[in-house]
Length: 184
Image (cartoon, rainbow, N blue to C red):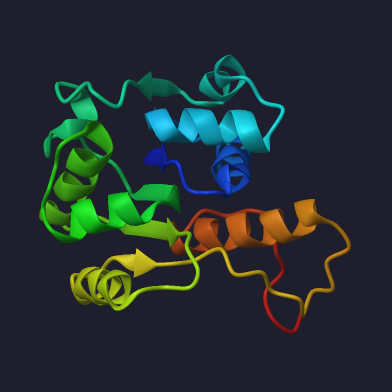
């Protein structure tokens, strides 16, 4: 199984990092792109070094490398997750602007009708952002803001992050033990 993961500069980089950790534990091949602004956000929000995060991925690609394998429709993967997804990235994808590897990989994912999940991060939302989300949702993109759930009574931020990452894995049909099905 190959999953493309992109981390953009929106707040919430812990979600992308945790997804990489879990996928490494599950021995899933990950193809990682970290935007330049994500690098700065990671530095501000976490104690991880970029080398730590690159070490979690099976493959890492520079955001400017449009010749990377994942930029081609012939590269087979089972889905792409942009986590967190900035509004700049959302807008670029919604309007077909493939000016970096994250945008191009998402464009190819759409073109090839593969699963694309956007963990969009912003609040409040403008009408432009909502229209971009609606446009992509109508194309089959899963718009999945990292909204915390409380019915499982989380005690820590880590439990909130794990629950959301589990929901992402559910969307990718990946078996995991981060969440329990409702009623169990």
